[in-house]
Image (tube, rainbow, N blue to C red):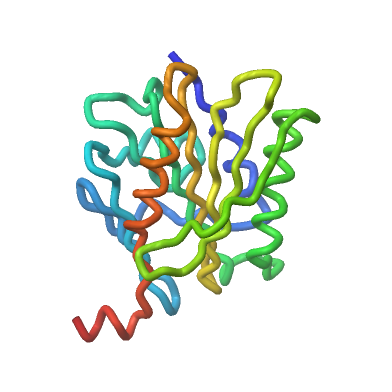
Length: 193
């Protein structure tokens, strides 16, 4: 069983940002979060389902895992964390959240961690979502890709974790599919539909 290093993102929810509570509207497969000016819809890739309670206990807002697998032993896990930047005491910026998150990953994985920006990862609307590839050439690490979406008053982090028995390239394709399903709608757009 692979224990994913989920506490990394949970460390950001202290004074830095406020984790979105479980009152966000969720159905069995799709997460809907109503931000201040924007609504976010996150759907799992085909063959994946949403885990909420276990994911929240680990510091995520929710996670997508393969059907018939559990959060604790999933071969692929896509964790989502939503931060409400507008409610933070110190008016934390998106850039601060992204910098702190990558710094914590580097501190956890150590000096051999390689971080590369990934070109042209986009959501459903075609917005480019800053995404970083993580690797350690000397050992296996479960964190493969992390995407950061700047919603202005919210920040959304999507993180791909894999087990050591999972093909990285295949998992990356699943993650990209999930990111392509990620919809961002101005609240006016939802009201008109």
